[in-house]
Structures are given as structure tokens and as C-alpha cells.
Image (cartoon, rainbow, N blue to C red; front, side, top):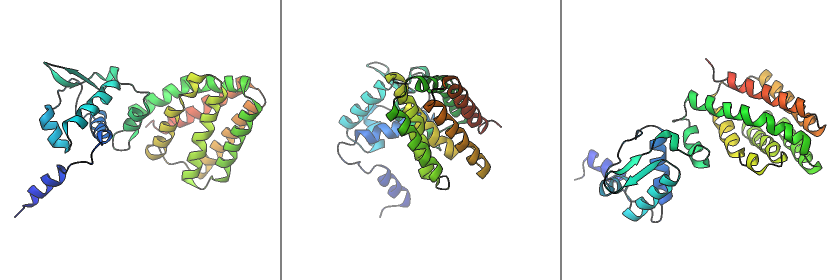
Length: 243
């Protein structure tokens, strides 16, 4: 007869589907991001870790390669596989950002760090957008704002439109490097909704007003105004995480 404890063990060790190295990456990545495996800590030996995760060694090795490429792990023949220093982690990697923004992992410090980066980059991107945006760029930004406005009472759709709005501004800067920052913006906005203080109806209306002002500043080529409006929007976001 299988005891309750044995049943749990068997369940935990049930093999994952073949070719699921990505699931191993997700499992280990989240554990490392959550500090369950600490910087400098040596992971269990391959055979033990493979059994713990219920995967074959090939899948585990592939996962270790992927995590090493993200800066999470270092592997040497004598020392084994260790968690790399946090300074080595690729924090702009979409998956890495996602792990850190997970509601069960994200910290106030991480969110403040992320918004600090937004405050450095996005006001300047908005200024460039006001100087460089094409007619198509402006039409797309305006359309995204209208979707925010129409869906002000629909949390998920408004968030989707908000992410698109800020992503389009980055793209309207016509700087391909700035455009790639949209992943960090998306990650922040999704986590902000889950972790920040809930917005009141008055705050939602004010937020929409600011976004409309920003859209018109870009459409009108008012670069300095666009810069200031974004700085103000992000300043308000920051307050949601200050106690």
C-alpha cells in the first residue's frame, strides 16, 4: 500500500513530458529569482537534481545551458553548477523580468528599481517620439489611447491598451534599441497592477487625462511637454510603492 507521504513523493517525481527543458528552466529560474537557491550556492549534483525535477539528464543539461546564457548559473568541472552573482543576471531578458515580477516573487525594491529605469529612459523616448513620429505612429498612439479610454472600466483591456500605448511611443522614437525596452514596460505594468495600490476612479480618470495630454503633445511635436508628462506619470506610479 502506498502511504500518503509516498504518494506525494511519487507525484513530485512524476516525469515531465519529453523535450520539456523549458519547464526545467522555468522551475529553476523562479527558484533562483525567489532566492530559494542563493548566490554562490552549488546546486545538487546532476543525478539528484534530475530525479528531483523528474526529468532526464539531457533535458536538465539543456536547461542549465539556457540559464547559464541568462547569467543565472556558472558551471565548472570541479565546482559543479553554482548560482551566479546577481550582478551577472540578464535583467532585461524577458523571461528573467517575468520571474522577478511574479506576484509570489516580486519585491517592492525590484519594482522601484524597474520604475527608476523607466524614469531614466521613457521621458527621453517620448521627447524623441514628438520629434520623429510619423503620421502612422501618431495615429497608432491615438488609437491605443482611445482603447484605454473606451475600456476604462475593463481592467484587463485597459491594461492591454496601456501597454500598447507606451510600446508605440518607444517605437515612435525610431531608435531600435529603445524600442526593445517595451518588454520591461510590459512587465512593469502587469506587475504594477497586481502589486501596487489599487487605483481609485479618480486616479483612473487623472491617469487617462495624462495619457491624452501625452498623445497630443507627441502629435503636436511638443517634445519638452512630452518629456515632462511622462516624468509626471511615472512619478505618480512610483508613489504606489512607497509606504
